[in-house]
Picture 1 (cartoon, one colour):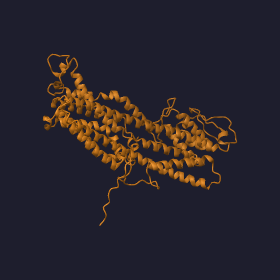
Picture 2 (cartoon, one colour):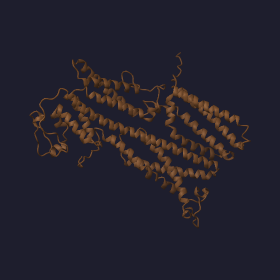
Picture 3 (cartoon, helix red, strand yellow):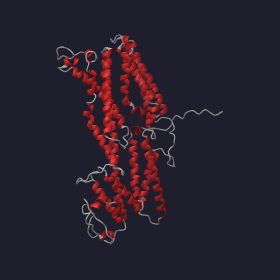
Length: 537
């Protein structure tokens, strides 16, 4: 009979244990204080129903904190990171819980505080419980699966190059110092990548990610992937000093293709530096592979530069914006001239990599700011909803306002999909920015729909909207504003105002789209040609 194997739960980190302990002690202290002041509630003038609802809420919080501490103990930092990532969605759960608790038929005889306590407990329970399967959002292999696959492929590619170059240097009797330093630097950076990606010695990831795999907040937020890209880029740049001249020319051609379609301001200067380095190794390669075909056809007067080609003939375009330097070059070159040329190619590669890493980090910062905006706005909306419930607004009024919110949110989502379709298909990883945009659009458009209905009804011409005979400037009651019978245009107004948030946040969308376009344009196979200073492409 096979033995039953217990699940291997990883011991949590000190930070997770300390956080859970502090939360548990705090919840216990709140419960003790509630019990101590139970008898004095009547003397303080607190209604009995409100105090009982408060006690129920405190008891529910204690249970939820204990449950969350148990999950944090069992799943460690991955669970805590998943809690933080999913926190912007909690205000939505709270609002739904409050609405269900307040609008449900059994809530007719309960005080509003009881509805708030039950709704809050319901929302937090869903958040804490459903985060358990979503803890994989904090694992390196599953938080951004596509990016993880690209990083693994790039790591193994650079590792193979590093091993091949190491074999060549080992057989060399007097290897250049720059090559030795470059090899050691690439080995060090690749070791960092292997540890960060949690790869085995052979560099091949596991087909199935185990449940006891540790997680981290860096993977949940995406910052860790940018750090891995930076380490891989440093290893890639260091290998240029180790590789042979033909391989260095190939790396230069790859960067030339990336620069030809990029929006880097110094792209022209970087291209000139690449061509100068390639001419040092092989002038014929510069003429064949680095001289654009269109300019070659437009060139009407080929020129000869024997000093560069060593007696051969090289076609130099008279219309080129930045022609090759002319003049007589010395016949003798310094012994470390190859290292200088490779250093130039390496610096160009570093500039391109730094440009791309900066764009990735900017996308992550935009996503983080958007999620924090969603969280703060959602909390403010929940506070407003809680005050409305405490005022014991009529249930039909609150239900109609919720319907207006949904109409504005759905219209805003349709508008978001239209804008995304107009922007074209993007092949650039956005690290969850699109999901954050959808959540932000639903929240802002819904609030705009509800606010627009009330503002338009409270305008001086509200009589025409409400269908009354004589317009009045006084504020109409909520029972008339959020009533389909008296406010027949309410749904239409909510739909129209659901489109307005894009007028405010459209600039932010354009900025983030420009960041993704910068990343896409700096690819070797980019389809967007870069416009030069003279307007040419």
